[in-house]
Length: 125
Image 1 (cartoon, helix red, strand yellow):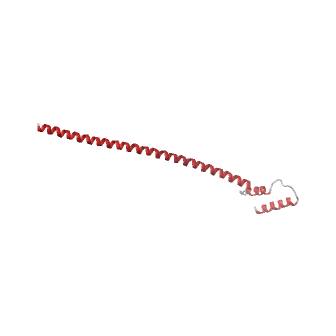
Image 2 (image 1 turned 45 degrees about the vertical axis):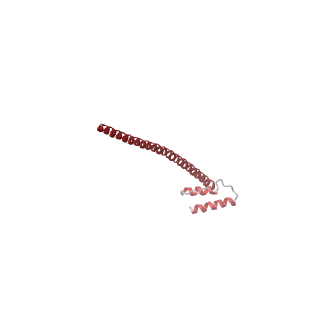
């Protein structure tokens, strides 16, 4: 690899000395050389393009995460409101049940006292 690299440097130098215009740029030659060995040199434009694509993907992922988190928060908020309504309904039912028991207790006492009065009235007369 280094021998080929040195050869390319010498060839580039010869092109510059002879003032010949080479069709393939030096970086492209290096890329071809390294590509044969499984390596690749990226230019600044390619690096910027890859970074931009990566950033766009990250932004999309973040936006999707924000959307899903917002949806989860809305669901939690709706459940909290629903639970608050259920608590109010349960408290109202409990208060009605207590009032009903108080009414039943009063009715039982009144019925018991009336029965005692009737029994006393029968016993006395």
